[in-house]
Image 1 (cartoon, rainbow over the protein chains, first blue to last red):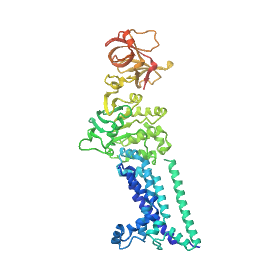
Image 2: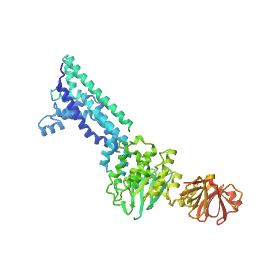
Image 3: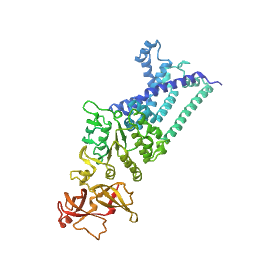
Image 4: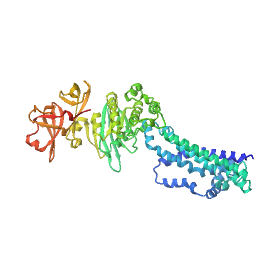
Length: 223
Length: 357
């Protein structure tokens, strides 16, 4: 039996793109959270952590409203590109970025906090300017956080179901990701197809976690 | 080279730092005080690590801070040694050493790398990673890293405090060598009298954020105005060169610059410059020279000052042919001997109680 390749490719594309975007956006946010002294920090942290505890349908519902053609982000997108964000791959990427945000930001924030201001000050006294010190000291020292955040963001996006169902639907090649395809196959009692895809996702998730723990452990020994 | 002077102010919740002092062109200025006296904060202000600091800092004629400007740490040409080595764990020793050097390559004078690596004995460590080094090795690499950027001034914040006694004794000789060979001033923050009396040429004594005494290390130890004189372990410091060895008895003779000879424990290399530390409580006095005493050092001097009188004891300053010592004796002996200012006395110090540094 041949596995249905479309959803696999789409899922891989979505998870990769989401992870890259999250690492780019998440790094400055995590650094800011790790170093800021403002009083409202717990409020912002709680807001960032929301997607961990919110039911995906709740998150998906709000995203549907915001991303819809009448929503503030959706209407702006329609004006810009002539296309709707809901039930499109682009909409799915935006939804995934929000949905997986804490899974990338929290490990990064923890890592930056453990690097500490001390190491940055040391770099300053050696003549490094703040950006230089960030890229040559803070980021390399926080590499375990980047690894953990990247893997968790990727794996979490792989498993996305409720949010996709709400804002993406089930359009082959556009929004039909693996988890949706599995649900579909089960609905139609095509257990064979469901097995192949579920097995694939299981294997991928395990490999991601395993590589994260193995690499993390070897980095820890040399810290 | 022009003078370096500072007046630093910083408000803290516990106390306010307000310190005015000059930095010598060369040699070690100790910043001494108990924990919480503001000595580390003062050093951080000099390094530009305290953004709230106010005042004026001028080093070698260059203004680092005044009412109008405040240079950042990276613009101040400093070398900073922290209590913990703070090596970058993701880099090899060689890359750690390069970090500062690469970012300050426009400094005119260059550092003699070979000589520095040899001085610090770190050449064999270059390929290692920080986690493969001992505490003492890490701190030596950190010193090398700070010096390779060719700073105008070296700031040391209790660099030995995180090391155990054995490692401390292992690394102190490296500081002695730096003291001899560096042509830049060093600021050495410490609360340890032994380190300070061994390494420093000048001393700032800090209490609650302000300078209680500033002067040479000798004056800081023996002046009635210095808070250190009131300490339980009041002591004086002498400097001289080793002139004679008695290997059979494991003794050496040290001639001070003022011509006095002191016998001390240990076989020291002839000609070596040493500091002698003499505790006030190890000095006793007599009016005539004892000829049948076990005490090897009996030298004539005069009582030059009566620094303090307490219920049980008296602290005296003694002038021995311009070498100054302190003696703490009981008030009873003081009265029985009928001592007073300008009184001629024989100063007795056991060779075993003189510490050569």
